[in-house]
Image 1 (cartoon, one colour):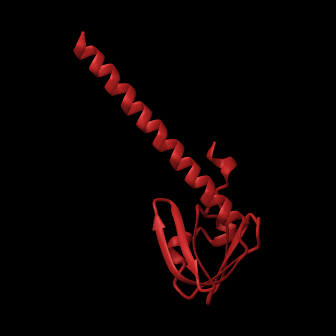
Image 2 (cartoon, rainbow, N blue to C red):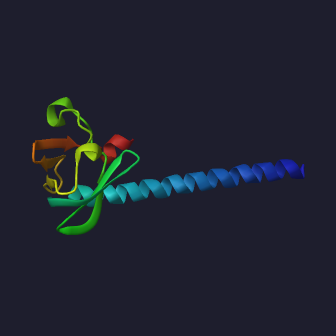
Image 3 (cartoon, rainbow, N blue to C red):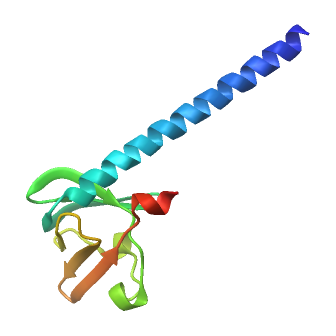
Length: 121
């Protein structure tokens, strides 16, 4: 009987930890999206990283690291993956609350729409 109780308590603890970590991650993603979405971005990339599916970058005129989940599209960006073609020195432009980010490179401009909170549901 004690063994069954330990197993039940262990399962409850594991499920609670999983739920709490998922909730914290969702809140963190919500905060990061709100910061990115409300930001007016216009500057040159000085750092770029890729985490999972997210593309993260820092601009020369803003110390904040911005992260977003860009979509590839044949018409907007020739199906090019943002984190693979964006380089240090390229420019980024996005008005506040715009649904499109422009990556401006020497060979042309690539437009990226991105995942929004409503897409997460």
